[in-house]
Image (cartoon, rainbow, N blue to C red; front, side):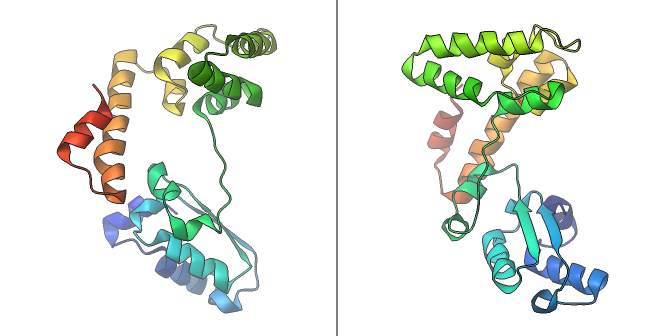
Length: 201
């Protein structure tokens, strides 16, 4: 379920929605559930108490496996209630983009880029870039401009659409503004000056 859609109808409350779902689909409630259910809850930040809803569901039934996702990563990350119960998976943009387009992943490549940027370690970055190029060169769909595009625009899935790059830049700026002006503000109060400095342009 997508909480932003629900939020357009009523104030989103994941716990209540799950109760309604169980009642309508299985004629049961959390404590009596005898089937295994997988719940993917997207845009979970629209429920201000998403972590408490997850905790209650988690504590009352071992039959429900939940995955919470959302465009507000800060909201999901900065939550003490969820920290003890959640298993986090970091999906880096470059790996996601290559996996999506070419079914290719190289965990060393992402780590070497971090070391290149933070520590100036060039050798591993060069090594794994060459390794990636060797792996992908025989892929008929591979575009040699992908690496340059990644360095300019990042590896966001929107890049796979091959939209106009001016429009892509506008979208990326919009994403940054949303994080600063909406997501960060929802977690902690920021002054207008701090918001402006965070955007950095």
